[in-house]
Amino acid sequence: MKTPILGSSYVTRSPNAADSRMVNLYPEVVPEGGKEPAYLSRCPGMVYLANMGTGPIRALWTQTNKNVFYVVSGQEVYMLDAVDATPELIGTMTDTGTDPIVIDDNGTEVFFACNPKAYIWDSVAETFAEVTDVDFPGAQSVAFLDGYFLVNKPDSQQVYASDIYDGTSWNALSFASAEGSPDGVVRIASMHKELWVFGHTTTEVWYDAATTPFPLAPIQGALIETGCAAPFSVAELDNTFFWLGGDSRGRGMVYRVNGYIPQRISTHAVEWQIQQYADITDAVAYTYQQEGHSFYVLNFPTANTTWVYDVSTGAWHERANFMRGAFIRHRGNCHCAFGGVPVVGDYNNGNIYKLDVDVYEDAVGTQKWLRSWRALPTGQNNLKRTSHHSLQLDCETGVAPVSGQGDDPKIRLRWSDDGGHTWSNEHCLSMGKIGEYGKRVIWRRLGMTTKLRDRVYEVSGTDPVRITILGAEILITPTNA
Image (tube, rainbow, N blue to C red; front, side, top):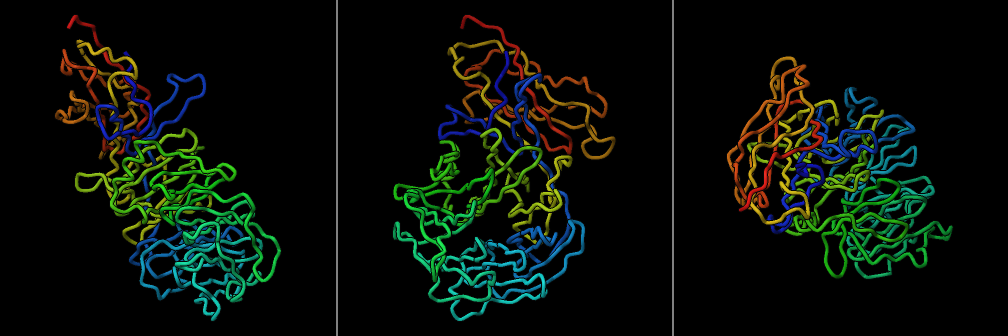
């Protein structure tokens, strides 16, 4: 009998109902001609690139027309023209915070919104300076649209516009208020020549109406009755926005927008996890694309947890580092793509890393992967005992390193016979040394006669080897019990 190892991460309030956890693995669909309809692939490892200051890495930004990228580490700003280049310190900020920084550019000026201060790097004059115009209102976030830098004034409903192509010059009268609801603006972002103005419980969409002194106006009928629960959770992907939402009835769902309609993409299981966290307002997200998968990565600093949504499959998984015997949030705090390389910055120090699908360990510690799932497929529990003889895991074997750590990689199995409440000891098997492609991973005599209807399996590993899991099969015989 095939046991449903494929799928996504879905752990409910009651583990008896669902206890399917997936950490550092994600599913990929095989549309035709494959051995199985899908398989589980190991998440990319991290390759150390450079260290800049003491950290944390608060933002990364690629200035495409200049072919450079910027790194904000603590209060220092660095520029690099290659992922392996020596970082150049271009400026120092006087703020003392560690919150994420929102960046945008107009081709010449790179604007750093630090809440409330802001700084500009002029890439032509090669100068870095604070925005000191007396009419500058402060910047909680920034967006560039039709030649204007737009900022939302901290702790207000107001959005201001700079002078055209000049982020250093501001007019005290060039502003408008988000008046659809008195919930305050927490984040702005631009896409498709529109400005999205996120409040706590509602969202407005504005366009360039060419009016003066403020050029933008709300699109009539585009008031969205869903706001933003975490300002730094807003991220662009797949030609739309993703964010952690909230409204007058509650918060903690994850949305993507379709036109002007928010679509819930989080599951009840993910939402149950999120709504247990002590603080979700500090959630920070980034997006990246790799090998046809588009990922929305949502970090919860207070909860020390990372959730990831894969647009290509609509499936959620956990992304984590493994330190001192426990999973913690992934080290990636922000992202930029440069030269086809996905670069992430560390939330805990001044390091930047490359996400590499051909690397099976993390630069800062062990990368452990884990998958747990119910033994019986949905709808096939007839409440009868079965004689259970073995479990075979169909995975890619024989791809171990020639020598060193992982040259004889191990997979660990444990199981629960009470629906995921308590677990057995681990049972370890080899995945085969280099070239042992025909190696079979079979655990035998696992509990024999047991309540298979309640059994949950968990497989995991830490060896630096490629993991491709296509399926799992249980050998059982029915009994009269």
